[in-house]
Amino acid sequence: MTDDAASTLENMRTQMERAQEYAQVTENVFTRLLHPERTLEVSLPVLRESGEEEIFKGYRCQFSGARGPYKGGVRYHPSVSMDEVIALAGLMSSKTALVSLPYGGAKGGVVCNPKELTRNEMKRLTRRYTEGIRRMIGPKMDIPAPDMNTGPREMAWMMDTFSVYEGHTIPEVVTGKPLELGGTPGRVEATGRGVAIITEKILEYYGRSPKNTTVAIQGFGNVGSWAGRLLAERGANVIATSDVTGGIYNSDGLDTHDVAAHVESSGQIAGYDGDVDPISNDELLRLDVDVLIPAAVSHSITADVAEEMQADIVVEAANGPTTPRADDILVERDIPAVPDILANAGGVIVSYLEWVQNTQEYRWTLEEVNADLERRLANTFDEMVEAYRSYETPDLRTAAYTISLDRQATAHAYRGLFP
Ligand code: NAD
Image (cartoon, rainbow, N blue to C red; front, side):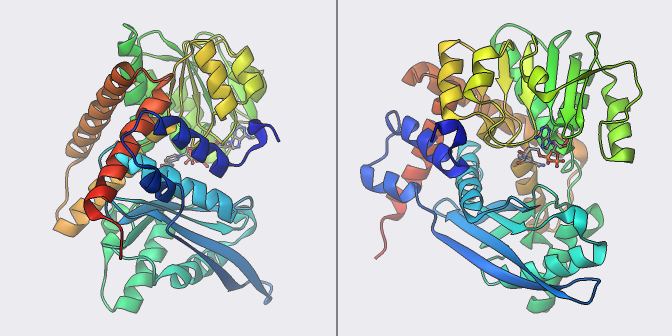
């Protein structure tokens, strides 16, 4: 098997092994950091509208709790598997440590196709899943959040189900809730805003600015569309974007707000009638742009794409978009890639700020949330660049993972091994 076909879990372990060489981590602790602490599989019987019962599979993995309560989203998708959930939980542990949040990492998922479920079926599935994992979660234990195909609506159902069992309302058991139930201003666009902040930082690092920079974005969902709109507001020219239904291109720049409005009303890019030419996903990834932002799925930047890529810089908005072999090629070709565990950390940072507000029973303004997000991401970017220079790591990803490994190893060293 080539590593382009390797699982997300194998890729994550490869990345951690690359950083081990530079981190202050003993072999014993490193071995612990490669293994999830626990993974639960649940069978979820759900009543379909037809009157039949269908069993869905669900998972919750708590990868590492050394640095604080477990934290991570819940994904609904037909391709969800235990391996993928474990890998994404591991990525969360690396991410929370890198951006210095007092959390460990977790992830959840249900194998289902939300497009084939009615609202009531989604509600019954979400409530049953919450019941299935409720002994594992809690505001001081493990705090779920939205991920692919889940959002404020599902978080409200999860919060309600958990609260019913506890006998009182506990908003801080999940983040990403609607504003009226203790959600925070700024959460919906947080990941895209983080991508825009980090893109600006990496451009500054190379003595450039977003102004008149050309950008291509693969995936125009929550993350891609907000990153596109916020980069356009900073003066960038988003010349191409795409989704599962295809892509659009205009060398003078797309009207990102107009495209976002079209996607919001129709659910897809196909059918957009602005002044654009069609472009395939393969062509988009090979466009001659200043910045390429993969914001769709894992493994989109394979070795082949890395060989033929013409972008100057990659900013990873999606989780795990670059395979380790593609990483090696990008290093050889001197194309820097800002890793996912920093570039898309805006979501978990603002989730943390929501949890802090809930536990303090206090509401921050949007300006306060955005300023805190920007400060945390900018500081972490500077730390990553400092590690890249001082450790002389081959790339920014290894630098980011080295910082993260160091922080997790320090927590393990202080806590010791039980018993
Ligand atoms: P989303 O479902 O809102 O959007 C995904 C987009 O990718 C859609 O436009 C979809 O059509 C497109 N897409 C899917 N498969 C594709 C393919 N094969 N080729 C081209 N486009 C394709 O999801 P999102 O929340 O925007 O998440 C995007 C990525 O960012 C995922 O990898 C997710 O794990 C990651 N991420 C999201 C968040 C968040 O807060 N939403 C946080 C961290 C990381």
